[in-house]
Length: 185
Image: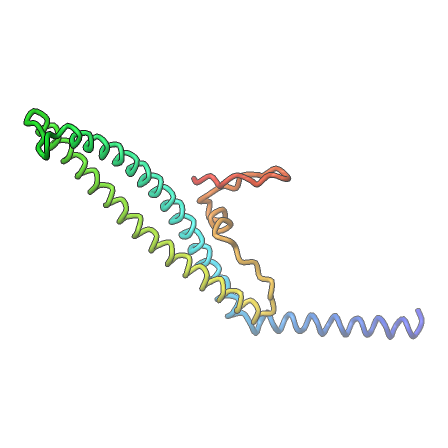
């Protein structure tokens, strides 16, 4: 080997040693930050799962409320039919008892529907809080990862977080398809 080759090898060894030294130094110097990042990622995954679960609960409640609304609309039409049978502004006595029973049932149904709506409002507030928490944790994790020299630190989406926790299972998609929604376990 020539002197020039030895010089090149020596230079490369110095560069590799310097790089390795820097990595070891960073590993030791940023141990606490790495621990914080791991803990933060755990909380981030938990928040992502909460986002997905509250979103699923919102969708379920919305479907139930829509079903209730359709049923209430039919019940209201049935009550309106009594109004068409009224003579003047008075309902014949033989229909009044049936009207009162249907009206009471309708009012109870409205109360149940409104309770479901209040539950939906609570879940939407929970969802917003979960989204805010997830976003704050994701921003903090990205900032801490940049501080550690990893600007491309992978932040899991809420769906990826739920898959990681086993809350949903990913369904394979065919190339060119839009995919299917996740199946909840």
